[in-house]
Structure formats: C-alpha cells, structure tokens
Length: 239
Image (cartoon, rainbow, N blue to C red; front, side, top):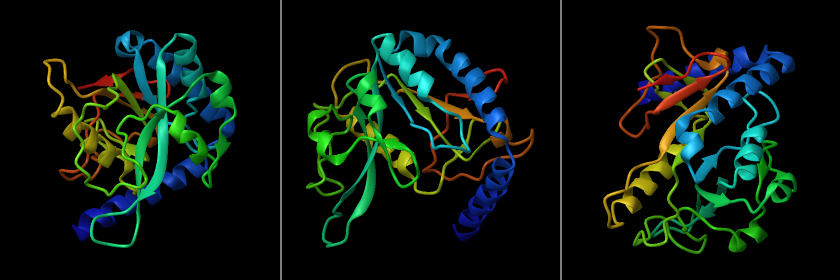
C-alpha cells in the first residue's frame, strides 16, 4: 500500500511539472478541441442529465463551454459540491463530494471560486438545489439511504492528473470521485428496475496528461476505470 501511494505521489509530481511548463494558449487550444469532441459523443448527445467538473484557472482542460452547451440543449447539469460530514462514533469531520444541479447559465456565471479557484455553489444555495446522492451535512457518513431519491446521471465528465491508454485515471489524491461513484453504485443497487446502469464515465485530459504506450497509472481496487477518454485533439479512446 505504501509503495502504491508513493508511485501515485511521484506520478502526480511528474505530471504537475509538465503542466507548469504549458502555455495558456496551448491549454485553450486543447480545451476547445476536446470540448468539441466531447459534445459530439453519442452518449453526450442522448443524455438528459449529466455531471461535469468545473475547471481550475489553469493546468487542466476548461469545461465552461460544455456546461453552456448542455444548458442550452436543455440538459440537467450537475457539478461537484464538497462539504463536511461526521463519521460515526467520532467528533471529527471528513470532506465528501456530491453533485448538485445548476439552475441556469446565469446561475453558473454567478458561482464564486473556492480556494482552488474553482467555481463552486455556495453553501446557502444547496438546500434549493437537486442533489445526486442527497447526503446532508448533518448526517453521518454511512447513513443508510434507500436510493429512492437518487438523481440518476447518464454521463459523468471527470478531471484527473494522469491517464493511461487502458483508461485508468489518477486523480488529485483526495479520492472524491472514486468515493462518489462507489456511493452512487451502492444506492443504484437499491433502486428497483432493469435500467439501473452506472453513468458513462468520460475523462477529459490535456495531451500532456496521457501516459505513453506501455506506461500504466498505478491503481488498486478502489480506483474507477473510465469508459472513454477525450484528450486534446487526439481521437477518443474507448474500452
């Protein structure tokens, strides 16, 4: 386990160094190409409810135009919201992630940046938004949920630090997306019906974040594999 953590840490350091040398022009150019590719995917075209990460000011593909296209097309758009909950039998809190719905383009434009510079819904607005998992800040991690109120997503657009040709993903080290997807899957299993499929998972990457052929992202059983990867102006990679 220690060697896996070390390998992930070293890969993040390596990719972060590469990203720090990129020009803003290159990031913007790749963002435009990747966003156009993503919105042309049949899975995106047919989806009525999607989740999209909101990008940092630099160092990763911008997703603003994806949000704008989805809202204009009448799709429901969910974005990450990170907050603290209390684990059972302890007074300490832990940070978890849910997906919350945007109301409109105006709503998106008014989001304030968090400490990472990422546009984020404010806490006072959350009670008036649809939430994918619906775990409240007053509830404990592990609180039993029926799944009845699960807001089903059809596609989830994920960020990451590094990706490989086998569609493995290395996140930023907090585990937010892997835990969210595991919680989502657990709730989905409680919902009766034949159409309870996991959402289509697609990663967005700069070309510099994709490892060379033969190089693999270090993973374990808790890491979710993508269904597709859109990187810069490269062709879409699928399972």
